[in-house]
Length: 124
Ligand SMILES: [Zn+2]
Ligand SMILES: [Zn+2]
Image (cartoon, rainbow, N blue to C red; front, side, top):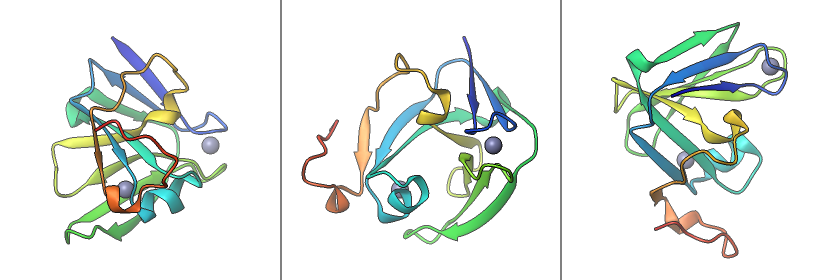
């Protein structure tokens, strides 16, 4: 199984092989800022199963737990497509929306429930 995530303009492409190790929905305020939506969803793949093509820029932010996260986005359209959580150096997180695939596996967990908008249902 190969899936391709892209930014909005298509210049930054991330090809992922196999199934994601985990799909996680995040209600945190940083994900709300990053997406402009009310939550983020990340699919975690093994680093060796991910190939990146095209230009990207990155910025670093600290997670609440004290580990930096490097977020990579398209320099042309600004979409964040993937990020590297330093807490999990073997993993690459890819934004599920970037696959534009309504059949993508659903999240199996959610985190930062204290920031969940009341109308957003929780996958558990
Ligand atoms: Zn782009
Ligand atoms: Zn988050």
